[in-house]
Length: 146
Image (tube, rainbow, N blue to C red; front, top):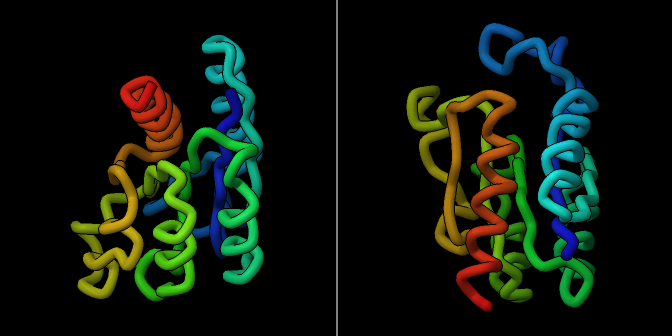
């Protein structure tokens, strides 16, 4: 079984970008943490990051038939991207939305997620652990569907 982890804009700057909000853990460190846990569970994980909305949309479209689920931290596109919403909806691939910070406790514009309604669940506010919870959530969705 394979899971696709997608990371949106500016997540490549984790560890340096606003550490008071996002922490000091880099995206590479988060990937190692997720890969280790996935290996323990016998799951393959493909971990990708792009600052390009179109590339994220393409990866979602290409996930069908290759991945059992998608875990996505869409970054700022969470609040703006109808294209990501439409891609998730059109493919029907089980998707879990994750965030490092609690988007509901931040600036008002971050309170609304364009993709939440087409995702199977949302995890936010647990820092890097949000990724592990996303992994567990995606696996739970897959097992429930079997």
